[in-house]
Image (tube, rainbow, N blue to C red; front, side, top):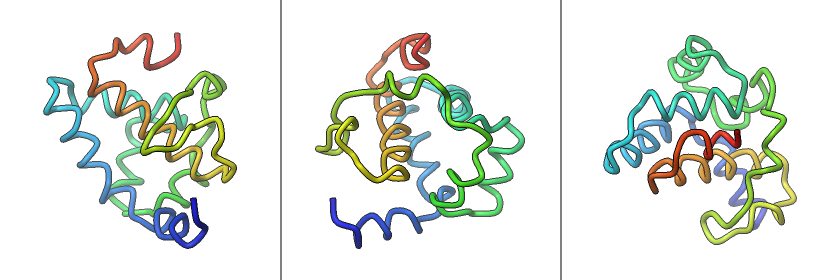
Length: 119
């Protein structure tokens, strides 16, 4: 993945992408609450803190920089998302973004929450 493209993604507002996560999930009969649960599980944000990040329209770089703690089980998130194998992504921030994409994708594909949250 090229650096210029990464920088463009990093500067995208999380609040701009968030509604797309919800739409993707709801089209498949899942809920906003499940999307939020996944994001909070991944980042360590509380529901209130997540909403603050959305309201202040932070970019992805800031969103992950301010995340309380990445879930210790993220290493269990593997596979391909957007044509890239997660395990082979070198950039730490891009890897975090792709973790989130992968989890939302699994939700939309009907996977059970326990499996998505690597329990």
